[in-house]
Length: 247
Length: 322
Image 1 (cartoon, each protein chain N blue to C red):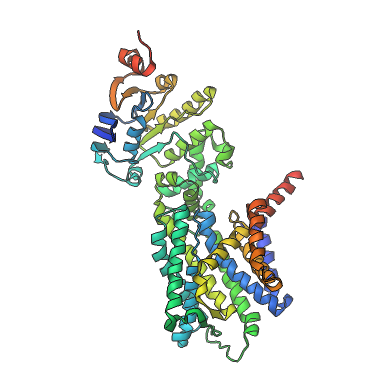
Image 2: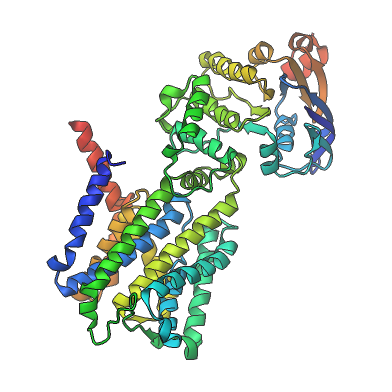
């Protein structure tokens, strides 16, 4: 559903993304690993439209979205979460999801009736929170949540937009080690249920091998290796550059 | 809605407001009416500051737009000088002005937004000040008493007009403004504005067109302020170019901060307190600006959430200790 064709983005002399080709199929969970500065986040930013490439093409559901605005991509179904969580800090958990739904349904122009009157939207928001086991916390603001819950909420918002492709930038960074699997379990369960394609940037190898169908290794802007998690991790080159193991 | 104790309080306050002309002396009533007009201004201003996160130092311009609409119609089209025409006209012209100025301003945020809004309002000030033959320049324009649905108030003195029909007209306009604004901030539209305030990047990424919604907020805000300006003119009886000066815009900011911009009712309380504070400070000392400035310092240091914020914190503490 997503095809990246010869994509290039340089920042001055830094080759952030250097002629990358990539394909993501429907319902597939793909992880990108690589050292700091390998170009992972740049790649995600290019796909979500945050920055524009120098050359190459991005096709999503057979549409060319290479230079489309983030707004257009969201409407098409490209959702993302952030490495640094981006939430509506003064709104409740419920409202965080509800705003996304109102926006999705084009209802944010409605300016007189209280948001609570739109009970179908509220019910749907609660259903989404339920699928992430977050509905008991619906009246808290993000200030009262743990780091793991914040990450889940961040993804629940992208989820509410009915994204067909989710880009998750380090979904477990900043989450306490013993919570990481709990967070990933609840995210992946929801993703699988809806059959959403997912691209995850991740550092934690246990998570990469536990949850992804395919792993892509990036190094200096290029794709160095690609395949099933255990295959990739046995790759000598990958071992040397990414894990620093020389055998 | 009726189960919420807040609405019972609103209703009680409304009932008290109905009897205000019988309680207050004419002098105090006039002050109170100034307060109500500024409360409408505060409601509008706070949609931008409190709910959208944009601090405008140029909202005097939209106040002036409303006020001058009234004064100019009075001077050039006296046959149309009737409240039911003047109020929609004032709303229309403040809307037009805020669309033009807002279109430029919402391209920026933070201090850049504030300064742009300020400069544009000063542009209007310069026009009002220099175009003497049309606007009366620094002398301003006199505002006679208007008609209302064919009722003429000729021969009636201003204080009588203000303590009778006009007070109830003003109260009606305030009530409508209050309810409309209350509706706006709780609606999906209002939630979208708050989303933009809280996190612009995220708002963009859930598909909200941030600039466009900022402009909507700007225009609605400008129209409320314009309405306040129009209603104010009849109490004051006179308009001058100073209404578009940044000092006056500063007063709008001041009263909103005084009441507390984080709370819906804050700017209303702020507008009331400010009106009385300014008058009594001016009446008792020539150093009244010192009093206003001193209050601002105390406010920033001790009550960052304004008077309403302090009360609401106090209230939640009392509730907790029960």
